[in-house]
Image (tube, rainbow, N blue to C red; front, side, top):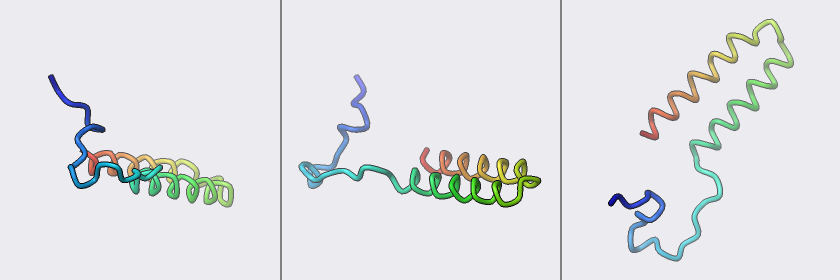
Length: 65
């Protein structure tokens, strides 16, 4: 039986609070907010900005795995 990833905490980290948001999630949120601001400022670039955000999100997922 496999152990869920959440329970694979090293012994020295037991009892320490876990961060509410991961660094990867924070980067994705910041990129999405920046893309939203750029899209609002220059609507004709919405598709290239969306593609860029998609690429960054996929790369973040690849790095996670």
